[in-house]
Length: 187
Picture 1 (spheres, rainbow, N blue to C red):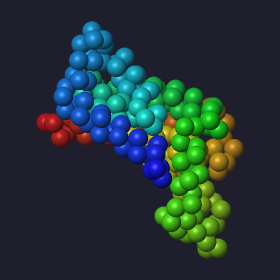
Picture 2 (picture 1 turned 180 degrees about the horizontal axis):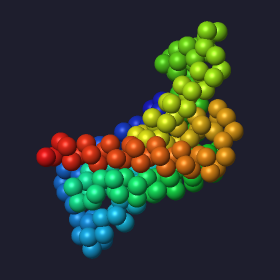
Picture 3 (picture 1 turned 180 degrees about the vertical axis):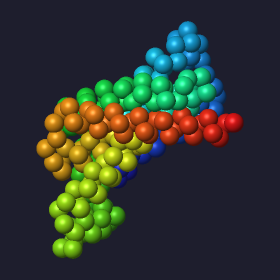
């Protein structure tokens, strides 16, 4: 049996999304929505934040990048991603990756980072900043936001409004980087 079955499945979703994108399956999405690219961006943003659908959200964004304004598309996609993140934040104790996170805690790599972070020379403030930074990178990227949300919710007490605003900003930046990157490399 696999040690990390859900992470293996996550990798499988990225492979499946790549294959489907290569076959042009997501090209038809804009046609199905009658050219409503921003509604598609909202949907892509919602998919972007959840672990098993992140790759599909990313593939939709890649296809829509040349059809939507990158700044407006990032805002709309960021709103969709924030809505998903709020749902994840509200239900973090039921997160799908919860058992995988606990299993990963025992891995050599995370034990090394934990020992480094909890070294006597690192203050609690620096440790908190590093954890928030790492969680922010995860939330802004196509990686499963469940990891970042779990980090944020386990480190400090954060109010829902602050968390929503943080997720919105991080997701807008992440999605904007994707949209601009696609435009840059496809030009």
